[in-house]
Length: 461
Ligand code: C2E
Ligand code: CA
Ligand code: CA
Image (tube, rainbow, N blue to C red; front, side):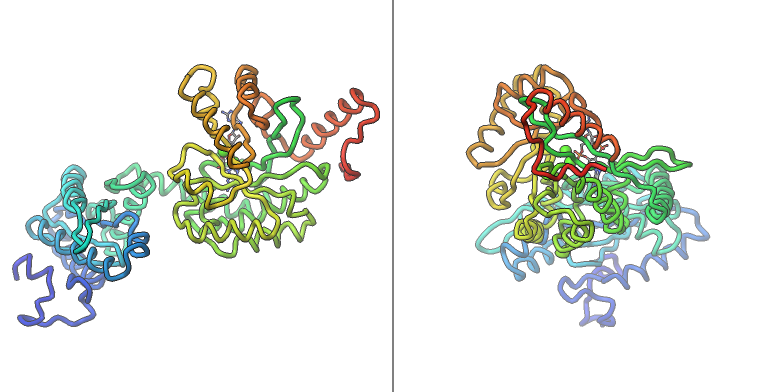
C-alpha cells in the first residue's frame, strides 16, 4: 500500500471498517493511529531507530464554528485534512483524533530538529487562507511532537508526551511548535512532586493566605486588602503562587484550593471594619466553570462575609479562553452583589471593547507600567490614557506594584485614586492586618478626636 492509500479510506478499493475512519475527512481516526504506532513501535523494538509522532491543533477553532456555522467549520477541517495529507513526508501517516486535532506519524524523523522542521512546514501550509466560497478565512495551528522511544515506548505514553508538548505550545500563544524534551520531562516530574505535596498540604490545612493593603493614594489609608496565597513545604521550601496556582488548575484541583483560600480570607475579612473590602483572585479555570458564582457565594455565606465586601479579580487572558461563559459568570457575580475587577490590565490579549461588554467595577493597572512610569515616557502616556478612559467609563482604578514615593506622586498627579505595592506594604498575615488597621484607627482618632472610624463593626479580634 502506498503512503497515500494508507492515509485515505478508499472504500471502493479496499473497504476498511468504519471504526477506523473519521467520517468527515476520510482520514484514519484515533484507533487507526493507535494501530499504526503500535505496529511501528513493534518493528522498531528490534531496530533501535527512533520515529516521531505529532499533534496539530487549530488555534481558536471554536469561535470559527460559532461565527461562521458548523458547515464552514467542517469545510475547514476537510481542507486541513487535505493539506496535511498532501504535504506528508515519505512514509508519513495522518489521522484526525478530535474535532480540531490531527495527529501524525513520521517514521523517518529521528530527532528534535527534524520534527521542528516538519512542524514549520505544516504550520506554513495550514496558515494559507481557507476558501469558504463567499469568504476566505485565515487560521493558525499549534504543534506538539514526541520522539520514540525517548518520549514513550507505548502508544498512550507517546501520545501523552506529544499532548504535553502541544499544551506547552498553546500556553506560549498561537502557531507555536514544541518537541517533548528532557527539560519538559524534568518539569513534569517536579510538577508531580509539587502536586502531591500541595494536595497533602490542602488536606493538612497548610496553605495560608496573606493580605496586601490597597490604599487611598491621597492619604495612604487602607481601603481593603488583596488576598495572596502562601505556601511553604518542608522539602520543596517556599513555592510561589505563580507556580502552584497554575499547577492546581492544570491538574484539576483548583476548586478545593480556592475553597480553602477564600474561606480563610473571608474569615479574616469579616472582622475588618465594614467599609474595607476583600479582593480575591479568581483563576482562569474558574471562569470557564458556570458554577463559580454560586460556589463563591456559598463559601462566603458559610463564613458570614457580606457579598458586597467581596471583589473578585480576573485577568484578561483568563476571560479569553471562553468569553461566553466568562461573561455569564461575571453577570451572575454582579447579580449576587459581588464586584469584579480586571487584574493585570494591559498585559493580556483582550480588546478594549470587552471592557464595555463585561461591565467590570474596577481595573487594576499592571505593575509593568507602574514600575516604568517615572523613567519611561510611553508608560506614563499609557497610564494617563488608561486613567482617562476609566473616568469616561466610570470604572475605578487601582495601580499595582507601587514601590517608590516618586511613582506614587506621579500617579496622584495623573488623578489615580487607589494603589497597592511594597511602598505601602507587602502581603502580611491575618494578625498583622488587624495591627495595621488598629494603628490606622488610632492615628485617625489622634488627628480627628471626634472622627468615627467605621460604622460600628470594629470587632477586631
Ligand atoms: P497578582 O494577582 O498580579 O498579584 C500581585 C503580585 O505582585 C503578588 O505576587 C504580589 O506579592 C506582588 N507585588 C505586590 N506589590 C508589589 C511590588 O510593589 N513590587 C513587586 N515586585 N511585586 C509586588 P504573588 O503573591 O507572588 O502572586 C503572584 C500571582 O499568583 C498573583 O498575581 C496571582 O495571579 C496569583 N495568586 C496569588 N494568590 C492567589 C490566589 O489565592 N488565587 C489565585 N487564583 N491566584 C493567586
Ligand atoms: Ca491580583
Ligand atoms: Ca495583578
